Length: 153
Image (cartoon, rainbow, N blue to C red; front, side, top):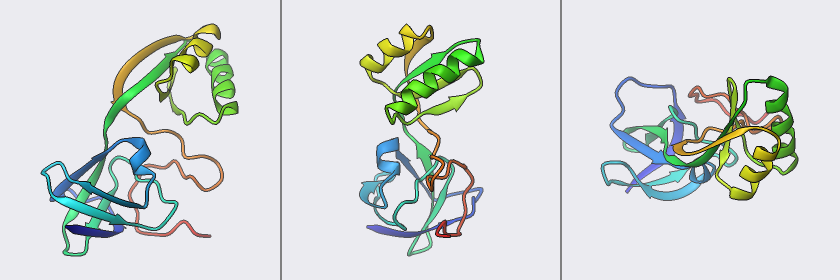
């Protein structure tokens, strides 16, 4: 089993791909497998969210790139920013993780939330897509570059 302890800067050619859904990219301790079937054990600093594009180095020097696995999400869209802001407020008030794009917001699929968002006037598309939500203002950083520094300040 490959043991992974550290993040590194992005590299052009990784030797493995670790594809995980959002729920598992939040875990600092995890036993899983790479796309090629090799077993890996994550032993990263607690509280660090893995983002698509992040690179990791196993203790044997193997470089692994993280990818967000497609998962069932609801993508809500509307042409008016105020309508999107209102829906974001109501979803945030329910502590729903949100990915925010130009003209749309995305959350893990939930039919009850879909009904609420439709009631606010947005269109909903249920689809399989990578989910990269905002990290939060208090420590759950939302930037997507790879780095080897700690976020303990």
